[in-house]
Amino acid sequence: MRAGEVTSGELTDEAIARIERDDKTINAICVPDFDRARAAARDADQARARGEDRPLLGIPVTVKESYDIAGLPTTWGMPMYRDFVPAEDAVQVSRLRAAGAVVLGKTNVPLGLQDIQSFNEIYGTTNNPWDHARTPGGSSGGSAAALAAGFGALSIGSDIAGSLRTPAHFCGVYAHKPTLGLAATRGMVPPATPALPVDLDLAVVGPMARTARDLTLLLDVMAGPDPLTLGMAYDLTLPPARHERLHDFRVLVLDEHPLIPTGSAVRAGVNRVADALVDGGARVERHTPLLPDLAEAAMLYRQLLFSGSVARFPVEADEQLRTRAAGLSADDQSLDAALLRGMVLSHRDWIEANNHRELHRHGWRRLFAEFDAVVSPITPTPAFPHDHNPDPRERRIDIDGVEYPYFDQLVWAGLATMPGLPATAIPAGRSPEGLPVGVQLIGPMFEDRTPLRLAELLEQKIGGFQAPR
Image (cartoon, rainbow, N blue to C red; front, side):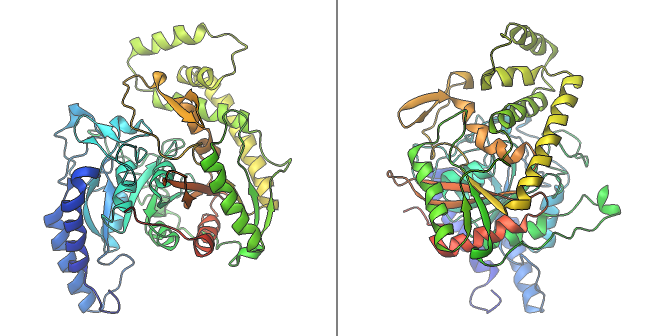
């Protein structure tokens, strides 16, 4: 567009034509907003003709359904809110518009954003563009599928349990989970809930793209405190990336977790990245005594995650959970037991868990004095087949022919989420079945530019996004 080779209007019309042609089978765009998009594209072209050049001026983008957009429904996939329409934009939607983006519409999510898939009663099921019988992931699955299918150049999503990174991994695109608190979340709230400047524990909002460089571009638009609170006193200045060249990076590579195996396809992706790092001259280690205990980290993550997710459950449900938790054996240290105990955590117990989290954060600070980034899986497998069993406790994931509880696959996502670290999801090849495989690059707190720069260098080394056939 800067060179005058294409206009925003042309890009927008092309994206809309692609959606109208292909989204009948993918079902990524659940709330189109094409008339306003075309008007915004015309405005962008006129602004560029006047000499304006904002960061996203004229770029077609999509937005996860869970963000408030004035005039469009926000349902979080919950039938009772089918007709809820907010009156104002979420702060991140406002930042997109101020940067000149053209919003094509909203992308599909799971019910209440609480699944690793993207389906709900209102908008139906979103399919993975690489294999329609498989999920694109969740809860930002609609956004990842839209990017893979060419429905816009960028998207914004959210992440508390891998909801940015898992869909990126499943669909072969890029995503960045920012440091906790880096990007304001106001207006990314359940429908009919006041859009207050409140940051939920563990939860972040972040960018998705088809190139690593575009992640950085979009993060710069999204990052910064809420102008109603900390933004009244502070301006954001992110530290630069620690290094600019691959051979200067010190990287810890992980492919084994004590609580769940890593599937062969994902292990191959991790090793492909490790080999590229070594070939580029980076210092690569597989073990260090500085790594915080992964099993304890997973248990803490389960407790913190599910203590928050059930906070609004009815009293009757809470009493049932407490009865079930009381029946657990003290020796039961399984992930399922940690989940149940987290659901009934007292405030005193939460404070204790939070203190343990701070110890883990301190451990990560020590680790990142010796390393610049950590490479790890995002989930143990590539995208799995749709599974709409209404009881997630009965669902299973298949890891190289062996079944494991469905939610156990969250342990790798929790590695960065529990301590609030930034993590960049990048494509790392494909499985023998041709499915995308991604890995995450975890960096030090508030040094988001370090994993993002490493993502750019690896994209140059091993390649990046490839469009599905």
